[in-house]
Length: 170
Image (cartoon, rainbow, N blue to C red; front, side):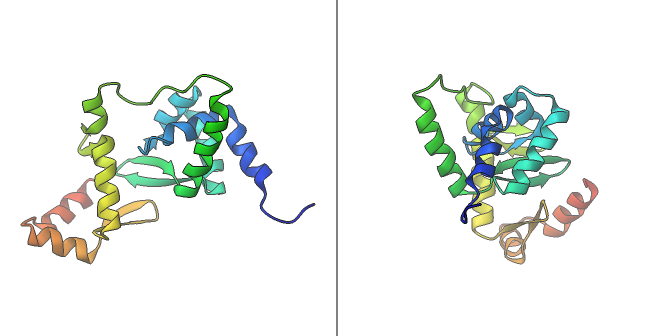
């Protein structure tokens, strides 16, 4: 066996049609649930968990827990760049995929899903709060940092009440 990176393992994961469809759906930058990814892949929701476990194990996707939901996203820029390069090559060989989610541009930009902001604006807000270290992702959960608590309190938000409400909703 040759030494070096095992591109065959990554290629096999990406080469499976269901997983390829899941990864392609995540290229839009929007985190999606297992059910949404199953729909994009054209498979049963029960089947998606096995595929997602393989993608998680390989480090191609990451998961974020929000309340009772788990949202999957690409694990980082190198994965997105590799997929984009593969898409460029595949573009000449077949039709393009359709975008997942609502067709209405306003709903893509921002919408409310249950009790949280969703869509591109929701994803951008999560990224910005994380980048500014106001919230932190740990063990699949999202939590406020000490800096985040200070900023929210300075903004006039009752952090104690917010924490109490969040504890009740878990």
